[in-house]
Image 1 (cartoon, rainbow, N blue to C red):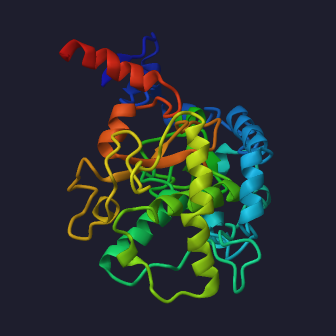
Image 2: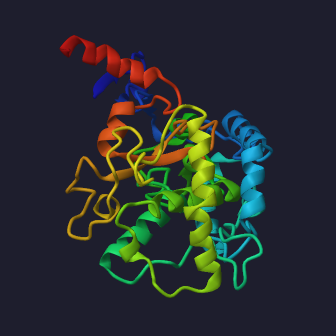
Length: 351
């Protein structure tokens, strides 16, 4: 903290101004006298007409026109289902917190609410569902189901100043980092929005869900967690994920010379270290993996890293990576050779 004396000959104007430097943002902010504070302009922006959001939307529309997207629409139901994940009353409270900074009305924000999509097989019997009810009821399964929900449909934890500590990824108040820096105030917690880089579309979330469940159903010892008696729509769903969809995702990455299952038994692996994934790596009720960590814990790894101009939680952009694997690859792309060349350059000095 650095103190600057305001230089002025008039005693009434000799007020002390504190220059606060935020550590993580490195943004200088001056605490102004109350009279001046009243005249300080408030930074205002449009939630749905800023460069980052526009770029991400354009890119997502291009994704939905690809052959891969057509495959998902051909195989899976993808009809709207369930309730809005953000209730109108809750959204109104969030809007009140962000209202001074946005040009949008509450009605603008309300129209941006979206429902999740059904992930079951196209033409399935029974009700639509945005998740598969296929796991037994026990501690391991319950923790596994929660982990699926949190990594696909929920944003990660945050500090609540602007970005909420966990929220649905379809939250219609989503703010890019460049704007969050402008309005962030550590004297109050607005907890009203999500990072734009954590947002996704209903279609992309559904494709991410079926990919992730496909990987989970390929875990070597997962069968003991799956219900033995299931309705037809759930049995068909499992069958498609373990055969047709598994071939689809496997062949997609083979075109980049990348194997995402082990060669012998087609088991799920950490795609970086090649270690076979076990149930305890994705769900271990005996420990809190947030604090009692294991290097083999499985995390949601991205092909293209999260950024505000790209919705990264989508089909064919997520893979199983262990903590070790994620550290090794860093921000590099799994389907490019940059991370491999880095490792080669290190290893050659020790051979």
